[in-house]
Length: 276
Length: 227
Image 1: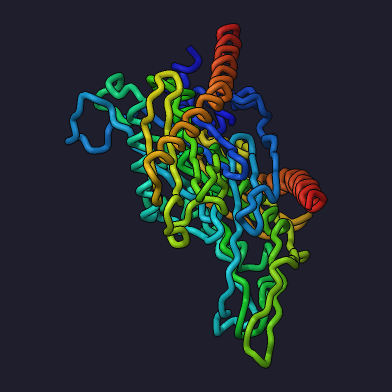
Image 2: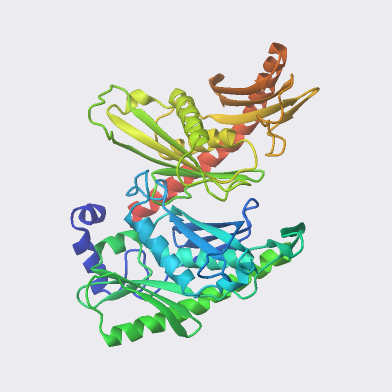
């Protein structure tokens, strides 16, 4: 009977839960799902991480290449993010060229990268104007159940922390790069931004970490990226309005989530380093 | 081996064979995309994809030729195992994603896909197990890793080949047989025998996983009824 109501009138079904200040999966309105993080499990990638936010699962794999830096920015390397939503992640996604969701997510991550929110691109430079690292960061979602951006950012940050590249030095006289594949180095200067996604409903109700169904039913969506206690990026693509009080509340919630995620990333990275 | 890894899919499975990791999602039966193709039997649509970071050399995002060939092989093998006549005018989508490739991706995909199909309650004749055997002069290697696999550019001489077999243990039928390289006929026979013996050994593991999945589903249903 409950499932019939859910299929016929999903919004009404959902509103009955919201009136009682809870959600179908038993969470409170501003509670986020359990998150698990595992870093360094993929041997063929130079850096990797697997993140699970409830059911949403995102795998980040980083492959590094060498290239010449751009002329306008000769001391910066490249981070090329790419979010892929293959057709196995959800029944709504069809195979073929990347759809709207994937492209929007890729653009979001690219913005974070280009504004030096995650990592200073100058640390990727080997020789100014000649050689720099190119990090292809492929974020693969294998299960889409809402909060895609949160999981993507977490996976990317953890994979970057986990990244180990061979030490490369530039020989001026011979104009060549010398590297020893056995010596590897990581990058220490990686910041830890954490994104929190919230769904907005018309009557001023805010819920955090929405599932796929909740995202579909919501009137609007917003994602706040924070680092420690400062907001570094805010994303609100259209949708209904938000007033100042609501924004403050969201920032408070994001802070809580940021602490939790930072702890998870520390645990995951230190355990993977210990294994090596 | 694990099932239920993709909550959004009708059925899904994850397999780790040594370092080779792959995940498979099954959706369907769904309406066929091209309404013009009317057929009394159901159709199977397979997509095999390597993640960009899964191999030593980074792969592109579009399906390249190797993936298309593997998709076709997977589809032909699974068509033998699935009762297509049970869902006419519908199609079942099988999506395989290789997360890390350390040899024998097709063999792992065959096992994983058949487990995912079974957990999605798609009617099947039998489970399918995949194995690969590598032949080098004087030796047979079962389940080779990437370094041990046959490379088309390197190994041109006699008695050097790779065989991937898809085997249905209960009915003792071979539904996929992919051979690359040069071998003598007696060696081929022996490799097939090795592969099928191995599949029979792996069968209980797959069956146990499926049994656990069914038990879990039944206990979940029981809880729902109580509510």
